[in-house]
Length: 497
Image (tube, rainbow, N blue to C red; front, side, top):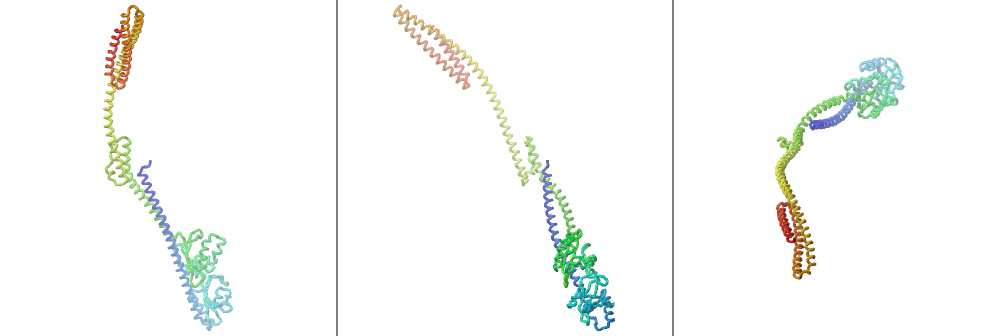
């Protein structure tokens, strides 16, 4: 059986654990949500800053190309022009600079001519626009290049084209990172990769809008890239190569390109992981404190109840000498009320037991008196039985005497008849004898009736005497009466004889 201390400790510890766990989970969830939102904003901000950096680099290339174009002397000799272009190529880290004619022929510094009518910058220059192309391969040497083309007013030429290495855009974002896994990449208006830390993707002109047709795992990424090519700013999460990543994106000003800044979620949310570890440690600490506190509190709660329980157990064992500790009676809580109730019960039981003891003593005295009275009554009953037997014997004597009187009366009647028959002996004697016979007959009848009446009275008096338990005196009186009646009966019998 579990004790109150154990039950209270388990209950309190469980409650604190649940409350702490719920609060920790809610706090962690809120913190993760807040941190995720903050990281989204951070990634967006990082993407916008990097996009501005790239836009600045593109603008720098435009200014360089425009400056070279303004300083180009179309009237100078071919040798002078080539010398100028070669010097500017070296100073501005260009591969080379070409001059584009109206017919689409691109004249290089080494005198080589290239048909540029199919190059992406040709139509722009025809329209008088400054163009920076995405990386593409030259037909002459199969190298990947980025071109910066600006219009020019020199005779026989419509524009100046500066060639940058294909990695030029990659270099512009190479120094931008976030931790160990964060990097930036650039997509053009068709979602083709034009700058990436993995230059092979640029060489392959990687396009996830096409790749998703054969790899559905790219669907989340493609959804984000569709937002990117619409020149939107935002953030998202996706799985790529088995890893979850977070991404912020922003358009690059002056182009239809979009820059994305991505990093693995595990690294971006490393603070959340640290927070998770902190929450776990905090949870274990709280649990330990809860168990200790619950044990102490359970003991404090259980101690007075155990004391009251011991008192109740003593009462159950018929021990009314117990008393409630004063510290329990002084408490103002429910335990104090319980102790006071038990104390009142003990006092009432002790008082009731005293009353029962006094009543028992009085009852014992009354029982002794009753026993003595019973013995006295028993003796009286014995005496009454003896007297009754004497009365019965007397009644039998009376009955016998009565029978004798009746016999005598019958004999006297016979004698009277005989006397009547002898009436003829003499009138005077006959009248005398007749008178005496009549008197004797009347006396005999009267005596018989008196004897019967006395017998009935004696019988009634006996019943009354026995019923009232005052039989001794009545029986003595009846015995005397019976003796008197017997004497009278005997006398009457003698007279009758």
